[in-house]
Image (cartoon, rainbow, N blue to C red; front, side):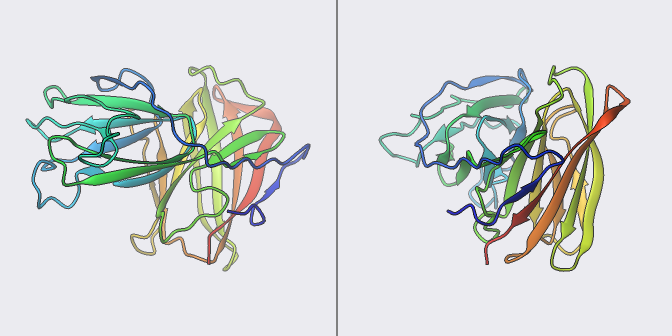
Length: 275
């Protein structure tokens, strides 16, 4: 993994640091409760019919790439069927050593939350229905500038063929994150190859950073959806992102508590995909 494909441009550039490591993920305690007891960043669903072998997916999305310190929530939406979220491969000696939800009943819908604080990759499965294995890839790569810290789940370069979804965590440095005061972000994504704007939209969070996932594929139309939960969680931008392309992305905070910001708070960087 190299850092030569990352460019960060800020109005006042004090420093650019990119931190990438391969530290192993250590076991942590997760939590299970009614939907949801904490404010998670990202939702993975145990889909209806997950207990059946012929169902295409058990967990959806089955493979995600997230920055460190992302809180993932698994929701059991398979009515009447208990499931687990258990790290490791089925039958492995170390299964459940990173996290283990225990049995998740579906009445009422139950969730299990876990914070991924260390980089690495974790496979996981359902002990009751062990024929599906999903994965979480965690990266501590980050863009650091005067106004923003931006974590990127795929690392320094996005390999779309192996990782079609990548979560960014866009966290302002100059605006307090009190989990209450609304913050409105404007995100614009350009296609560097065609010099065209793919996407530009406003996103509002409740006094939190902005988790924004890029999803490759699904046709030529660019669209967005989210957040994952009623008022919190990740937003998603879906487009025909391609390998070997540069995608300039600009981020700006346009208002705090409904009031326009007095001085610009923005960052621009170029996300390159592997060839």
